[in-house]
Image 1 (spheres, rainbow, N blue to C red):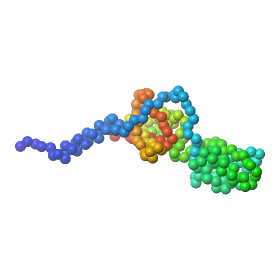
Image 2 (cartoon, helix red, strand yellow; image 1 turned 90 degrees about the vertical axis):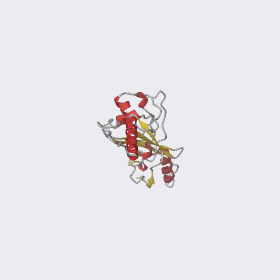
Image 3 (cartoon, rainbow, N blue to C red; image 1 turned 135 degrees about the horizontal axis):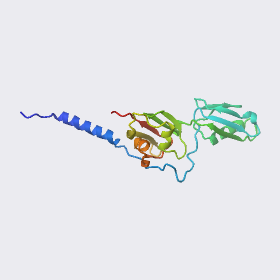
Image 4 (cartoon, rainbow, N blue to C red; image 1 turned 120 degrees about the vertical axis):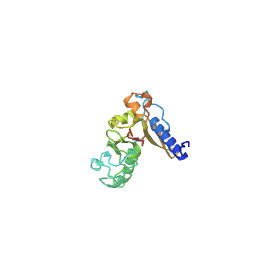
Length: 214
């Protein structure tokens, strides 16, 4: 009698083959346009948003005693002379200086306030987070014109067992309000020097690097 293979077994075998094929090719997520290693025309990024643990210098013109050097508390607030528990997170330095000015105007006439950010942490929406099979997983502040290569240099590159070409970049699309996923080819970029694998990053990007299964 002729041997037959049950239909379920055939389907399981086919599914496994497709899964392995997807692992080898990095999946079907779309890829981003290549970026130059050095931008030909760099420009300013989005206006900086103050985040928890940022260190600020508050200066009040002709009223030095009202200024201070402060660190934004984990709850997102700061306290300076005559200004108590002022919300700082989510504001630009210009917005925060205006809020402090309004508060101080109750005590002095026409105060002129300047806010300077000395050490940057930023909000999560202004960081680039790299997790998984990298030498030093980290959240790093986004800077204008940052590329995938810049971020990987900051975290020390891939670990020994990283499946770099199966990495995923997760990005929130502010216009559509949707989260999108893209394939990034980190092994081609870092180990083969493929410039087409370098892409521009955006504030809030998350890069996930899996380990190889083999």
